[in-house]
Image (cartoon, rainbow, N blue to C red; front, side, top):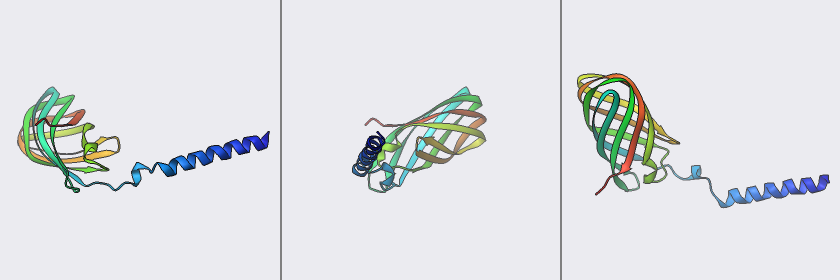
Length: 152
């Protein structure tokens, strides 16, 4: 009985090792350097809403126009816009990895000159944003920052 159990465990381990060897882990793939240039405008009164457009360019020569939507809520009020914002992605393996919903948390304050600097996450992919603009805003909020492929 013991020999049968040992043989079964050995066979299971061998099958797992063969399976891992035939399917290389995604983490072994080279990381792709991708950047975002964007503009964004929005408003908030407890509920926060902003929309914008941008372009993602990666080191492998691929690029994609994106639509940006940011929605959330908290203790927030204001209206602002950001032009010529920048973003840097981490842990990207192909350009489509940048699309989707990122968790967002923000504390912001601005009068005439407004700005943002924050790091957003979506699974293993992170996005560090920075930008300057104009507006009046004050608050703390949490929400969702979404990148989708822009229509033509």
